[in-house]
Amino acid sequence: MSTVRSSRRIERAGVNALRALLEEHDHIVQEIDGGNDHGEDMIVNFTRGGKRTGCWIAIQVKSGKKYKRANGYAIPVEDHFDDWRQSRIPIVGVVYDMKKKELFWVNLTERLRSTKESPGWVQVANAAQLNGDTVDGFHSEISSYAGDTRMRIRAANEEEAFTEAVRARQGLDPETAPNPLFEGMADFALRHEERLQVIARDLRRSIPIQALVLIMAWEWPRQIRFVEGSTDMNPVPWVLGLYSFMFLMSLTIFFELRAGRKPKETGNWLILIASNFLWLPIMDPDGDQGWWGTTWIIAGIVIPSFGIKLLYISFIRYARDRKRKQQRVGF
Image 1 (spheres, rainbow, N blue to C red):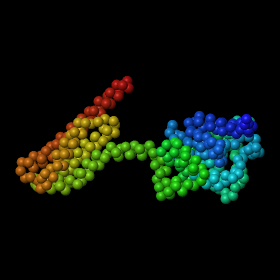
Image 2 (spheres, rainbow, N blue to C red):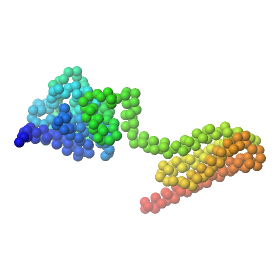
Image 3 (cartoon, rainbow, N blue to C red):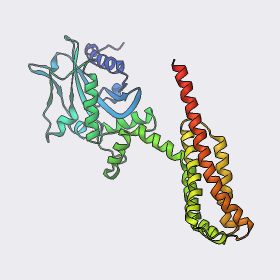
Image 4 (cartoon, rainbow, N blue to C red):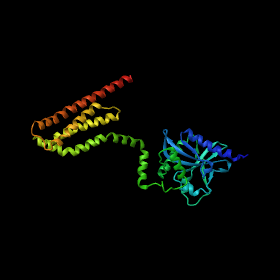
């Protein structure tokens, strides 16, 4: 029967201690199978507020007395020099002091990128302790380093991201190498992801408004010509009054939808008014000096004037009633 190496217990002690610490703080840990271990023991995806971030790191864990030094600890580089310094995700070294039951860490990629030749060992300072009190600072420092050096993993799901992180730790990959033209914008998008999602939702909701504005812009000279052909009055105030009313209605609908309410009645009135007045220049491109044109000119003055007042009164009353209800619930 096969035997179990006596050193395995020591090696696993560090891995288990580190894994327990990271998972206690909700970070995602993926251990690397021994057969695929090329200098790292686990890959970690940092989380923030219960959500995965784009920051992944690989960690080499060492346990035992041979990594202890008079002024701290040390991690052997061996034949990992090029892999660790060229990795597209930070490679972190962690030493576990079994006697003290304490963890200490160092950013191997950062250290090795500052030298052209392998130093043989990388020093780990006594002050670089990793525990429940310092894990958030560790997270922030590594995330900042990954962001500054554009070490980001972007993937649709956790499995794809883990696969990409495994590939990234082996060095630069031409297929996924960063494009400097867009990396800055991508980093900005990641930093403001939630806000950009809100803006995107608002833009989708505003598509009807955008369409209405384009139609009104296209209609403007035609509306002017219709008024000039139907009456001797200045056409600009007439068209501006009509357009202002329709635009106010569309904005009201947009913000009602944004608040989670469906202003069905306002929407129906907007469709009715827009479909009639925007169709006029198509039916009578040169206007009408008779009763037909006069009727629409008068309607174009009365409806916006009365409609704007009704709109403000109605929605101010709705808002007042909502506030009263909230105050009663609060008491």
